Image 1 (cartoon, rainbow, N blue to C red):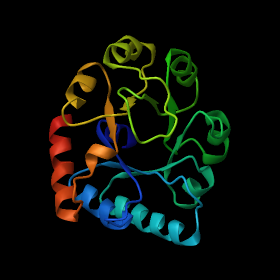
Image 2: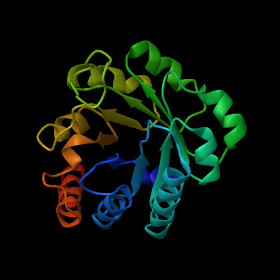
Image 3: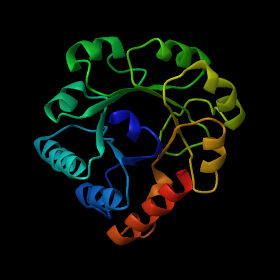
Length: 209
């Protein structure tokens, strides 16, 4: 079931001032997303945990895979998938506590990390940034489409391309071998309303088919 969801659009939910995360999640799921990552880098307060729990319920109702980034403890409490970065808990250690059924993802940024990640007990790998991105303060070097094409045969795991993805360049990334495109900035319209976000999600899904 989870493997079928590891294709196409991989939307990343972030905290915005103009649209609450729960409302944004509803719009994205109504737009047809079948996977949704809740990315939260701040203090995981009780309020944030409650919001994450509501989003987890929305994902279950929509038969979508809910993913928490970085935090194995929160993923376990919320019965969510877990996405890990290079500085987080090693995937092999996370697998010990999460069990064999939990979907695990792992971020990589170059050939060496991708090869190492392929040996980890994870269900999918992310590679990027493919293009320059403003979502990180200190981004890794840009990978580029041609390097993605070269790296794709080095793993049989589903591969998520991330970093600077837009509706204008997503098709080239999928054609280069990515199974999914992770989107942050270009997912959210300006101004960001539920109706506009739902429509933009639908547009993204059409591009990713």
